[in-house]
Image (cartoon, rainbow over all chains, first blue to last red; front, top):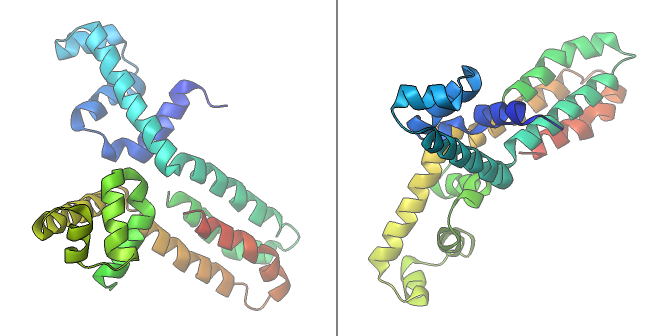
Length: 110
Length: 110
């Protein structure tokens, strides 16, 4: 189980481009800069409650997107398959090293 | 270059879940069932022009999503990398057959 901050950061990596600019700014202050709700509220000139609700809405949007597209889930699965592929070539280090960068590239495309 | 119908069908596979139920129904009639605009209009009890505009809007939404998330583009890239990985193991058929189903699984996750 991921803690909520880690999960939201990952969801943001996948779905940030679908949020509004205002939502992105909020989430960056809250998660990347680690500002408190009070600090964000002061910076934005709105109430702490308004910030809290806007963050909740952005989170709900990202969870809904994950529910529909499952990009984070697929990424995690892909990482596990990549590890299994490399494990299956453990006894053939030459073949393994020939394909390892490409396997990594397939996962990193996400 | 993909023709427009093929591209829209692929985009629909990736982004259909983010469209409204009404948009999905329209696109399925138009692309999967290959109904004409006139046939859809009659079935829905709206004008041909209304159907045309609704389909255009759904297409624009999918193109915008592809612009932001690039899932179709990434899928195509992933297919190419998968082929290159298998090619690099052409002279080691045993190793190749050991990982081929997993490589396929990584691509098919999309």
